[in-house]
Amino acid sequence: RRPQVWEGYLDDVRKRGSSCGAVIEVVASGVAPGLGDPVYDKLDADLAKALMSINAVKGVEIGDGFATAAMSGLENADEMRMRDGAPNFLSNHAGGILGGISTGQDIVCRLAVKPTSSILTPVRSIDRLGNEVELRTTGRHDPCVGIRATPVAEAMVACVLADHLLRHRAQCG
Image (cartoon, rainbow, N blue to C red; front, top):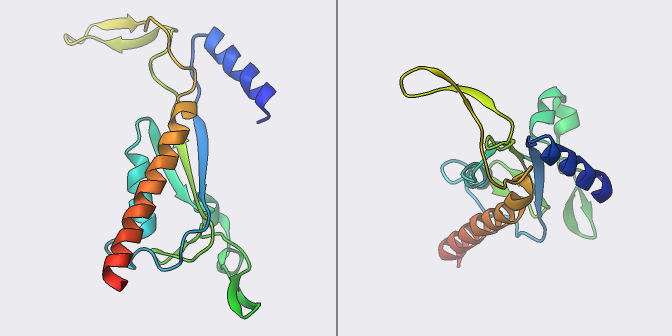
């Protein structure tokens, strides 16, 4: 969304005493090809684990992720050609990782952040005895924690990539 529209939307959510979720995209450019492992230390698996460990994250996709379920094999194939004497991918549906190993393309990760449950609007629950109660959170709370999660997601991706780069250097020199 455009910044002005986004600010207005968040202000409306805040005034209603609610919260909203977000989708965050992190793109890592210039990552060397060959990082990762095809079985036990897949780069995409490590990225997904790191991103899922962030509070409020409920989903992660690499590249086109869930959209690939509706594609044919041909549509999803990241075909290659030679360009200027080097291999060149014609697309990046896999998000820069094929078979658990980086391809040298941009690594694209998206994560879904849930709306925070600490909202000013009363919500129904039960107490420890099983009695029905209404809970109301007081104080100041963010209408969207996705804003605060963005630099955390960027840092997590950087940590995973640095870890894989160091492992690669240790194994390959």
